Image 1: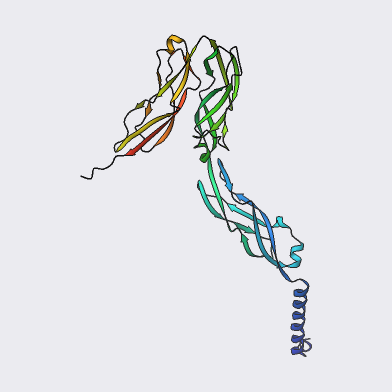
Image 2: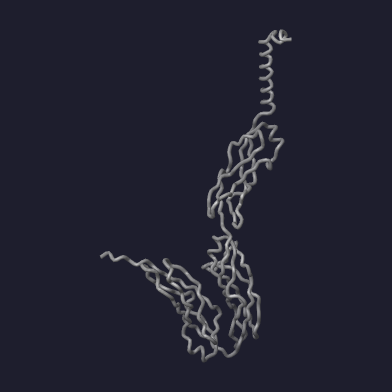
Length: 310
């Protein structure tokens, strides 16, 4: 047997090499390696609870290479693209895209290789509720009192949005009313510019309001006087304190109205202010006086004391 195997050994080896080369040639010609682009949906893993996750891209393009027959046996769902959010911190950051592919495929490129993510913690805070009157009641009638079921409300959402919310506003239309009435007022969260803030939720989206009307009351426009409490921190000076609006219309009994020339704000604490800012404060409203809005925005401007060069 061994003798037969050793006969023409060189020729047999040449035949084997020739057969192997022929097989490789045929396979290369009949099943060549080709490149293709695959679009894959981006997945996010290990996303932390209690956060809003936002990212720029929803898909990733993969340039891959493999024998032609392998492409016929797979589809795009066999390729995986994901970003791992384990141990990420709040804020905006750029994270790498990880790829998983079927056996036999070579990854040539990933587009994009990294993706911007914004990680926003979900928080909530209390904000004041302001009800604004629009329109006019019937002739000779004025609003004598407005009572609302809640003075504050809780807003919830991503921190970057909730931090911009200053108050919840609702509008009450008078529409020629002659008698007292009760209404459910829808609310919306607004920022310093009274623009609605997106992506936040008011946990109680409405308040109840009781509007009392009366005859024979007097209207008068008076100034608003901001009242500050305590001093600024050392090395800071108070440049200005202004309210928006700086005047307001009051309604009430003529005898009471005649004694009121301005309304004070509640005291505004300055002890911790080291930069200019805005605060929403309530008005101090005397008995027998009614206003359409009981809060104002107070703009406070402060600056550092100038050092004496002498």
